[in-house]
Length: 78
Image (tube, rainbow, N blue to C red; front, side):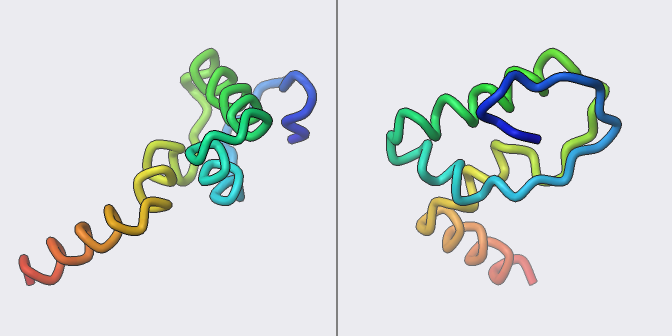
């Protein structure tokens, strides 16, 4: 999928590698934010599409402090 163009078609499943782009969007890179938003808009208008690694999960794990907190919770529960 070329995010620089409107996303056309219907997908049953999308496996993406957008972690870096999501991180750049989170640190306020306007172009990255636009590309991530285009992808999210597609997902919002195609709720049947299965997405591996939903964007909110990617955003959460791209935050190092949040990742450490989650790891700490997992260690504490075992």
